[in-house]
Amino acid sequence: MESRDLRGWIRAAEALGELKKIDGADWDVEIGAVTELGHHRGEQSHALLFDHIKGYPDGYRVLSNTLNTTKRLAMTLHMDTNYTRLQFVKDIKKHITDLEYLKPEVVKDGPIMENVIEGKDIDMFKFPSPKWHELDGGRYIGTGSVDITVDPDEGWVNLGTYRVMVHDRDTLGFFISPGKQGRIMREKYFARGQSCKLAVSFGHDPLLYLAGGMEVPYGVSEYEWVGGLQGLPVQVIKGEYTGLPIPASSEIVVECEAVPGEDHNEGPFGEWTGYYASNMRPEPTMKVKRLYHRNNPIILGAPPTRPPCEFNYMRCFMRSALIWQELEKAGVPDVTGVWCHEAGGSRLLTMVSIKQRYPGHARQAGMIAAYCHAGAYLGRYTIVVDDDIDVTNNRNHPPQLERIARSNHSHGAARAQFAGCHRCLQALRMDERLSPRRRIKS
Ligand SMILES: Cc1cc2nc3c(=O)[nH]c(=O)nc-3n(C[C@H](O)[C@H](O)[C@H](O)COP(=O)(O)O)c2cc1C
Ligand SMILES: [Mn+2]
Image (cartoon, rainbow, N blue to C red; front, side, top):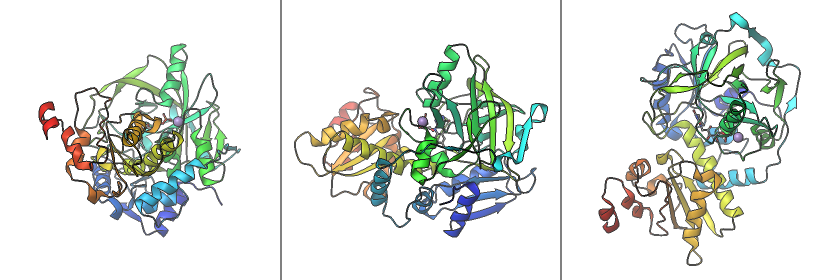
């Protein structure tokens, strides 16, 4: 099998009949609005390739809506494309459980070296980075991107998908929330008063962004995880400035230095919850030292929007498979389904079905699903149901579930509720708008 780049992925999406080309859109909110409409078309959506973008040379493109159908997701994972959702989650689980990590292959040259730019010639505005949502604080070149860092103590290389804003010609802002692996690495450098070197890729096989955007275990490089998944090492070139491995066939890569204390206002940015979750605030910045890009480069965009949004649809499958895997590892028997619901942006609402065997079985499944690595971060509600419910089937769930997932329950943020086999309607009791007394009574 040949190693795939973003252009190979586009050809494969076209072959599936799942790609649309759109000419003449404006980077200023228009690409974002059209992208969001696509998010809400779910399985009917197409991957969208924007060209002839206003004010930019023809061929400087943006690709969005890559992973929001099961067909495109399966194609990206090098799997078959005729699945029910539940079977697909099961097969992904098997796929990632049997994974043998493959180290990346270091090569001397690749398409990314077509243009290498340094010093005063660096201009991050040369790309049609979208302003995705109306009230965003700026233009975001990085949404489906990966930040590449090396752990200063342990030496392993992490790839994480964290948003990247363009501040000026050679300064980028990046927001990484607490506890993410790239943030832990950055903090280690900063705590020693050292700068943190990073490479960031803005266009690549969406499989790399899929890996960068999910909970690959701590200490495992996403390069090795992707290599294992595609059965072929990812080809990388050693960056001249940072020494970090950069994908040889990326569309756009920067090598940067983040200096402690050099923060700059970042955001706000429309979030996957469907609203602005935080205001503008100072966040670390990166100075671009080298800019590499292919001729006619393509930015891979994966902006958050109101749910369901594209990247969270992808994560519904991936995180469900990971949680299921962790349930099995913890010895929970007879799990028949796991679904990180799209109404909760794949994080806030996890549903598990079991063939109930003994008293405590539902509680055990719910506890572990709520608190295992893949389920813990921002996990809010976990519901356990009987095995006659297909948890992946939207029609089984009332629309109120979205409100539940987004509600703000006040009785201890980490308290999970287990409806243990009383069907998901039980969950309505958790609606924040009801007083605790009414919730108990309802
Ligand atoms: C499209 C997309 C955008 C994301 N944006 C951010 C972000 O701006 N900041 C952040 O901390 N996490 C963001 N995430 C979530 C992280 O990528 C995710 O938690 C991932 O597990 C982080 O990688 P790590 O486990 O190597 O830290 C995003 C995920 C996706 C798929
Ligand atoms: Mn990681």
